[in-house]
Image 1: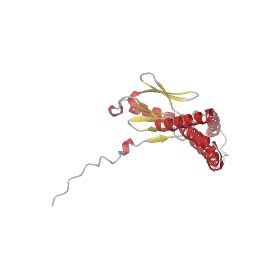
Image 2: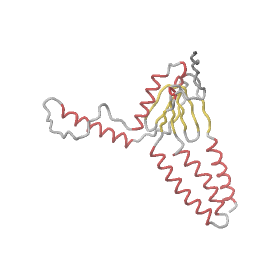
Image 3: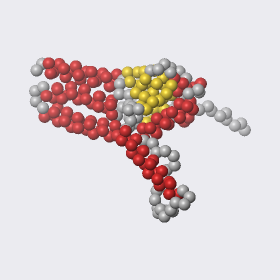
Image 4: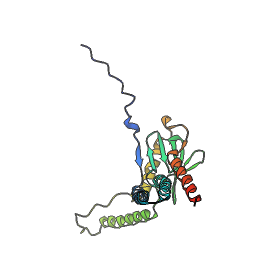
Length: 223
């Protein structure tokens, strides 16, 4: 009795080692959904109940606003795996193998530079100065509470209190950039993470917005 040969994995089966990590802004998504709900409610109401050219103006306005609001709120995302990082910004998609990434920089916005010196914004990971201040306050509080365990300190804290987290407390956006920096440090020299930076324009956003703007300009020019 012979044992059947072991079949190679199907090429359609995704390699778990290269699954993407997805990073998005929850507050941006929530704001986008709210804005789209308001725009849709007002626009559809004008389409249904409007008279004369009002429905056409409303349609053109919807064609302009819906893609743009979606582009700046729902669309931004960063996908990273062991080979490359893909940045989906409002109007462009930038694919960067780790070997092409030079450095991440965080100031008033998060940016990534390739080895040629070209800068790309990371829209999906906004910088929140309020979150940074909140994280700094938590870190300072954690330091004060941790000091109570020093020799000679009082040990009358309730055992039901939440444990003080170890290590520095970081804002969510800064934590994401830290994770991307770790991936860069680990994968930059990997032969499978080399290649060239590619940039693709988001015509699925630009085309309807441009069509709506042209239609709206024509309608307004007709008086």
